[in-house]
Length: 209
Image (tube, rainbow, N blue to C red; front, side, top):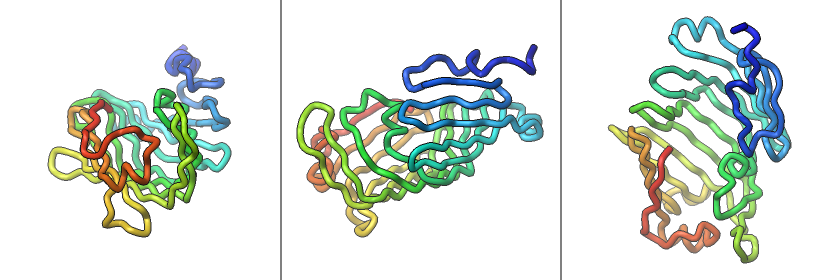
């Protein structure tokens, strides 16, 4: 019975899910927008880490991203992630964002921990030039290539967004605390370049990861 547990028993019918097949050990799930995520259980890594470990790959239009996942008592860990992805993936998972984007980015994630009491990020993303627009009104905003970095320093992760060709020019900065508290704010330059976000300069936005 354990060997044949269907994937749908664990991956519920979220709004971003467009279909699912297989078992929790080997299966795939469709994601709104046309991408498909596949996973394969890693038994030795699961045994050594006392959790559920798997290798996964996400493919779709302008998307080819893969890595490892480990889920246990200390939370869920993504590591050794690399490849390309589109902003439509974020929009499928977070449909309440006040904006949409047409952007492709190269992604490298050394380690991300969500859940538990030691949440953190060590990641880098470089986007191609693209466009974003507010869901409410307004024309599309042209964006240059951007670079997003996240680095664990002490007990918090520091997040920074800048133009890829002007890396000393901060557009957005933020922190992720170990308890999952996420705080971000835009600089005046960030407000000018990304008006579709709708956040005044210097006013922090707080959420949880």
